[in-house]
Amino acid sequence: MSNYKVYHLSHTDLDGYGCQMVTNRYFDNIKFYNSNYGKEINERFEEIFNDINTDKNEKSIILITDLNLTPQQAKDFDSKVKIANGKILLLLLDHHKSGQDCANDFEWYYLDDSRCATKITYDFFSPIFGKDEKLSKFVEVVNAVDIWLDDKEEFELGKVCLGLVSGAKEINRIMFPKENSLYLFELLEKIQPYFEYENPHIVLDENIHKIKKEILKKDKDDTLSNLISKRNVEMLSKNREKMCIEYENHRGILTYNIGNVSVIGNDFLKANPDFDFFMDITSRKTISLRADGKIDVSKMAINLANGGGHPNASGGLMGSFRDGFVYKNIKKQVEDIILKKTGVNNAGY
Image (cartoon, rainbow, N blue to C red; front, side, top):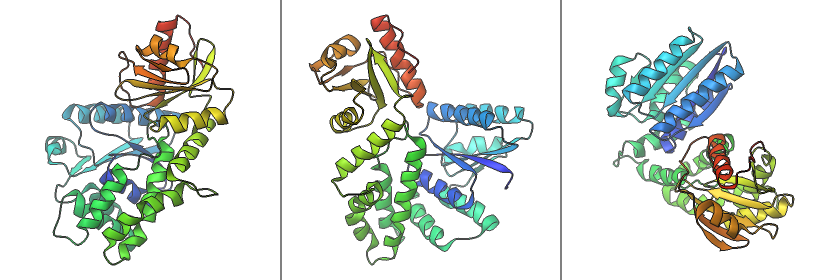
């Protein structure tokens, strides 16, 4: 498979990232995508196809794991792959029984509800590329909790790992998908030495805070909150031009569901004095605005979101916003709303 580039789409929980831990071990030329169920799967599949067209690979593999497709999704994806005339291979490895109809209709749809998707993925690729004892142990931990084998010794450890992944919100996967994947992989790598301890679930549970700090800390120590802010400000500063929006001749940056807006927003504005405001929009349509004296964001909140607040800290509800899964589409929506409210086309930053 050395001639192929792999595009791996997986779920956003422990089992989903576990599948990608397996393929990350076995493939060098691979790109990762993550999705919840529903419309996001369609958007991610479209994103993968766009990337394949951009990359212009001789051959590509689209691997989908731990995601149950609807019959219509399976039909649409099958049609798109067939148009590529053999240059794209499609493979789905899953364990959700609700996908049985799709498995019956499509040969590329592999379903086995006796194992979690991580174990299916490992059992599929390890005979080809070689077994890995350390990875195998991790797979058994994921399997025990994902299909709820509460009589297995790995079960309690799996519960801690499950909570670790669901609580790993430090790096936003919509704005920074690559960085998010790398962060999750590093977390899941660093916890594995704890598997050998006596009462590993207790020891690991007590050390999660420490492990996160070890990953996020570059030089001097700080609180986890400050380390998270510093890492996010670095990523936002690096991507500030493509994430820039303008409102009435003031430059700002748009984030999505970033969390901890007061800390990250103010830290970003201090690090980027040529930016006048910081806006975060959430999947609940709420916006949070921060400024550093260069614009009254309370007036901005009133105009855009029927909100208000203080000159340097305000918010509101942007009712016409429709939640999205790809950052550039979210940004385009917000720019269109600003255009409608102000009559000024600020797009292009």
